[in-house]
Structures are given as structure tokens and as C-alpha cells.
Image 1: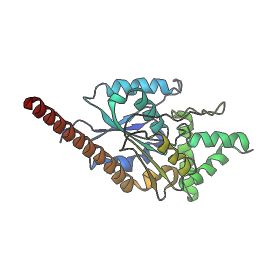
Image 2 (image 1 turned 180 degrees about the horizontal axis):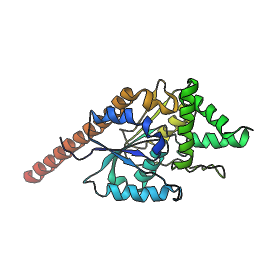
Image 3 (image 1 turned 180 degrees about the vertical axis):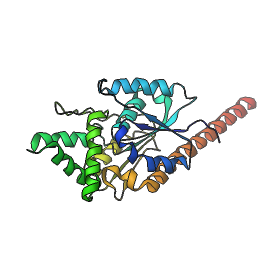
Image 4 (image 1 turned 60 degrees about the vertical axis):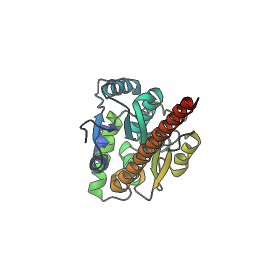
Length: 260
């Protein structure tokens, strides 16, 4: 097997990266995978454009198109990159990214901050229950701290000043959109909205996890990994079939030319 990665897992939320690790581990058991991280420092502007340039600089070093995987804002980054540079992306896997791709947990958090007369801590405690389900007091406090850090350091485009809205971003390559049946952020309706933008790609599909909420890929990592690998195999099989058909058509053309 080649040491060159076939898959690039995107991480634009360094404080949420722990919830990606079980899936990355499961995928690494079936394919070669690299992990690309973008860590925003306090002195940097929060800019998806800067991250896109850095991601492009990295992918220019790869020999051919690569599979991209991303959750939340990391998936949004992968989606924007795939639209701009489809020649460098073999397929795209989106986790908890709906058809309106800017909708993430921070969008809901800031909307609640504007509507509810509650403190930051109170809203984040509420968000823990929405994102993860019931947790004991110690776990809830630990998760609140993680979410606080993500608010300050992630690439999410939302803030108290404004919540960003983006229209659907169609891509001309195989897309797997995954979500959870009980996700309060990206609900199944948001997920099914992708079907309208699959276009002519026979490989694009949806998959809804039976649980796990917004971080379903953490709680159901083996099942998610199996679904993703099945998606990749279908792309390879269709690619091989297309090559065989092209070779057959070329052979027929040569025989017809010889018959003349």
C-alpha cells in the first residue's frame, strides 16, 4: 500500500478535535489518511478565505485528487474548497453540514444569546444537553469549557455581532452528506435538502445515523467509518467500470476503422 494519503480529514476547530479522533482512528484502519488542522491564534482574523489558501497550498503537494472529510465548520471549509478546486478533490464527506452549510452549533448559540436573558455559562450548559444529551455535572462542566474555547478559537463565521447565512453550495463531484436523526443543529430536513443538488453524480448519497446528535461521528464512529468506506468503494467501482467501458468503446472503434 502507498504511504501517500488517500484521505484528508479537515479540522478547523482545534478544541473539538477530540470528537473527531475515534472516526479518524476507524478510517485509518481501512485506508491511508492525513489530518489537516487550522489553528486560529488570538491575533489572526477569523477568515475562511485564509484557511482556504492554506488548504490549497497543502493540497498542491498531493499527486492527485484526494477524498476530503469534515465535520461542522471543517466540512464547510471542505465544501467551499471542493467548489473552487474540484480537480483536486476526488470526493467530499460532510458530517453535520446541512444544505445551508453555515448552520453550525455556534449559529444556534448566538441566536439564543440574543433571544434569552441568560449568561454565557447558562446558554452553554443548555447547548451541552442539545449537542451531547444528558451528562452528569462534572462532564457538563468539562464540555462547557470545551465549547467556550471553541467560541473563541474556531473558524466559525458567527459572532454576537452577526450570524452568517450561506446559500447551498453545489459541487460537481461525489458527495456523501451524513447527519443524525436526533441532531438539533442540522436536522434531517436540512440534510435531505442536499438531494436537490446531487446533480448527475450517481455516487452522491445521504446517510442518517440512528443517534449521536451533532457529534454522532464520535458516538457511532465504527458505523460512520463503514458508511464512508462503502461510499469510497462505490466511487472506485464506478470509476473502474467507466474505464472498462471506455476501453471497450475504443476497441470497437479500432475494429470498425480496421474493417474499412
